[in-house]
Length: 603
Image 1 (tube, rainbow, N blue to C red):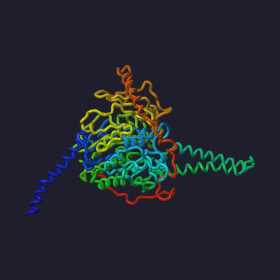
Image 2 (cartoon, rainbow, N blue to C red):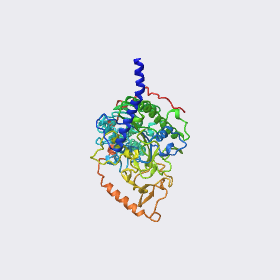
Image 3 (cartoon, one colour):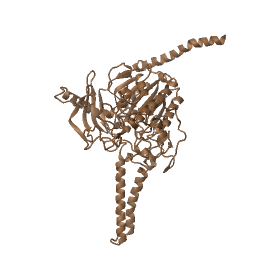
């Protein structure tokens, strides 16, 4: 009888207890968003934070952004249950600088993670360049607020500075408690059957010079042997050492790109060298799901930095031939499946309503990625340009999807200009931290806009850089048009092609860009594809807009200060003493056992 009474009481009060718990969570979240209350102790409720970033994904590749031929049901569902941004913008059009800006909320040139000319992204795990330790990431702030912080997937922000074990640029030095993934990025060299990519032009030049020197020495030796000249053999042998040294330096680095760059790490330890592309997807998914389960008491920050859809593709056999768009489409649909599995893990552990979830890409799709006539890169929809182009919309306009059930309105679409840099102050605010006051922070918290308490973006101006060169500026005057001014644009090859075919990406400066005087002007509100430049004759406000944006540029330049360049030749080149290695250098080789096999897709 007593047991029956207890069960009846439990049946009555348990739903009430659960309701109260969720009610107070939502109430606290609303207060936080409206800034009417602040967490008084470290034990106050704060949401988990799940950030998912795709690599090289075009904004036109998702169903929720208009694609009707690629299947992305899981990301589309995320958009239906949350808020979708239509003018979400990367701060840079390439991997390393875009991610540096995302992590810190600052333009990448402020930390030296940008190039004036030459290299525009890190080239080696064994280089000394990378995200400086004095930069503050959102992971570090949340770690200080008591969050467990993890990064699964791609890093591409450097590893070491002085020695193989200093890990000065490593994720664990930037606020992450746990790291599993690639410290570098996928490159063609990671696939044995793909043509070389890392410093391909330099590699070809060094090989040519080595052959020329070797031919010269052999010719000299032949002439000496015939007795035609009187040169000491010591001199001939001395000259022979030059091509030998050149060959050794070339071969030691470029001859083993796959072994040096294509590796997997768990925290500070190299776990696979070189990595097996065919098992990378399963391993990363297994790690992400395990991290969620391991840290479900919360609060946690998990940054899932996907290898998809960068080339070479890591698509598993279950997805080969499943898409209507070849290898790239297969990769996109597998990426969506991975996102679905991660979201399922959140929901299965009862964390959906207490997790702030975000999905994006680091920049636009890679138009120049081709295999003969076969397109391997993404589709940027109606937007001109692609990866590597800092001004045109196709290089910087990316998906932006946020979900937090009960707090953010489901199905909301926002057309205001926002930036990947805005994620930094947004996440910091959610975690109860403070944005650093000792440096320029270019991002602005998105919480009021996402929640609907304000209708306009906090950005009046957004500055679009290609390397360290300002290519374009966006001006959104409240309740007015969205203007875009282009100072520099790349010259497409062939002319009118819309990309720079025949080279990796379009340049930022030099002979292959056009400087516009007067600048090009577009009204993005009416011409989002940037196909109809305005003139003083067609737009009465032409001169006024150009002048106002010019004033904003001058004010912006007053915030700039010189910093050490992380992409200098000295920082970029491969240094054997910095190379991460499992085993004894240079005999670095190891393979992970197992790898896990999460339940396959239902196709």
